[in-house]
Length: 76
Image: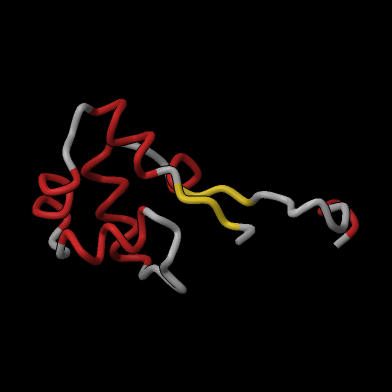
């Protein structure tokens, strides 16, 4: 998938567990795991905002676009 999720990186930087983050954000640990492992099809902006607030980061710290070796992204 071209969108990579780096929640685990921010969790490590903040020394926070998945359970603690889920509780503070207000989502289930299972739903956070789906997002964290890159299996989510979508994320609500309100959830993304809550993640950023709790982790004290920007959306770009949690999500990034990766090329799959295909087209040059500057040409799209």
